[in-house]
Amino acid sequence: MWKLLALCAFVAAINGSDLEDFKLKLRGGLLLHVDKGLEKLEKQLEKHSKFHPDDIYQALAQRVQDAEEHCEYGYFQCGGNYLQCLDSVKVCDGVKDCFNGHDEDADVCYKEFLAPGTQFSLRLSWTSCENWADKHYDVHLRQLHRSKTFAGNADVVVDLVSQDHQHRLVLKGRYTYGKKELLLLSDHPKLKGYQFVCDFFDGKKGRAKCYIETKSSLFPCGTGFLLEK
Image (tube, rainbow, N blue to C red):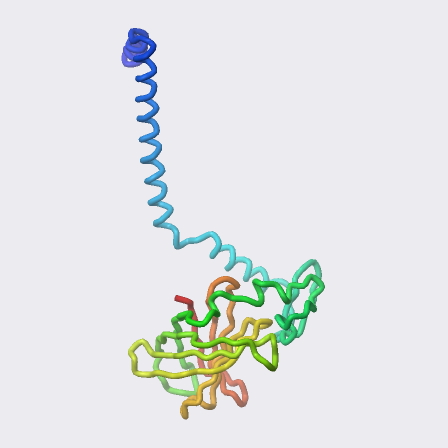
């Protein structure tokens, strides 16, 4: 109370120009306080930036999509108010087959994480077929060209290097836009009977669940996870 009365008496005692100077200094002090508060908030946001709202949204949207009525494997869901399923070979072939044209949309037919030069990390675990230890690999997307036979596919070449540098492989295969699926094969004598399949579940980032299968019967031999660096 006494402090407030003293402040009022001080303000009443100073002239107009001094009062304006006092107000400016007071505002300056308040702005400095606000700046410090904003700086503290920015540090907190930076600390928690890994919990990005967009990542949370994408994960939730994928779960909702999986829970809803969906097309059979090998078919593309056009979206919209009712279900329309399109053969995946017709996706990104230059012709709008979906009623809403979604099969030719840029977000379907172009993926930044599939640009040549992209780096991935891969974890592979053999659960059967071979008694091989789990390994981590560095994956380099060397080439990606639209297929001359099927426009909805892209021919792919990747370099696979184990992080302990004991194994180096070149894998070739295709990416199918309608299925968001990467299929890779190796001509290594010990791997000729297998194929590596990665299903990308994130539309914006290069994240995929991978499977090792026998080429002849598609018998499951292992699992993996592919992540863009």
